Length: 181
Image (cartoon, rainbow, N blue to C red; front, side, top):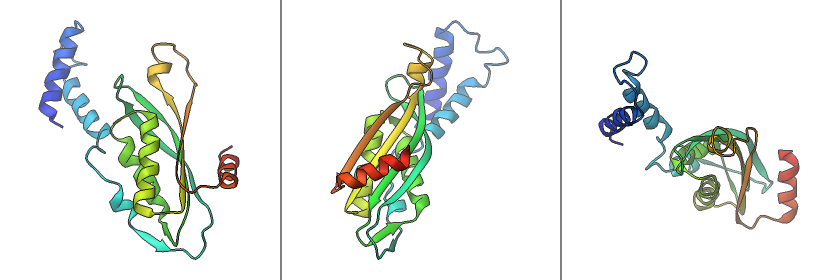
């Protein structure tokens, strides 16, 4: 990300909005916005492989579920935040990953310009690709500020997306849904 270009763009945006860029409250706003976007989009160009490749032997192939992983992301359609919780369930095939590594995987993919459907799919695909479990299921529930603060203005409405990979049996899906209630 070119921070100087972002600063200039925000200066121009403020000017186009009819604001006085030299006003006390706005003087440092372009730099602050550039810093904020650098943080919000810090997952660009990063891979979750470094996190997911740190595994441990597991004797059982029992279901592993990490739920309520809080995240925030930036909608690529409106450049507004969406946020919520993600659950990752997988059936190990001899190896498990440290539980914090699943949360780090969510961070890698959520810290980029995103849409919720792609975010959910990217996490599932990366878990399948790197961890190589028998199956994976990712559930994402999020609130989109482009729907709550503008447009239809429906605060509290949530969008739920699912992504599956590998062989994830129906009874295990039901088990995950029960755990998420």
